[in-house]
Image (cartoon, rainbow, N blue to C red; front, side, top):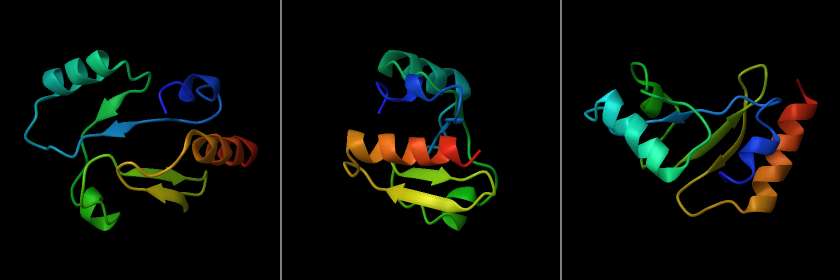
Length: 94
């Protein structure tokens, strides 16, 4: 996905939200840099992960401009073509 995101970065907001709430922000940022992620990282607020049904790391969730979930994929799910389609739809619905 990291190769696709830059093409949509000016149209779609991307964030990596940590699943490990015990990891400090410096280590999280370092990990993101090591992985070459072109998006910012953040911690979940309150019960965000539970509320969204995230039970495992590497879950991908797309929200439209109204906050409606338009796509979800678990670890290893979703192809580059799936992500391009999702990002194109999100960009068009802005």
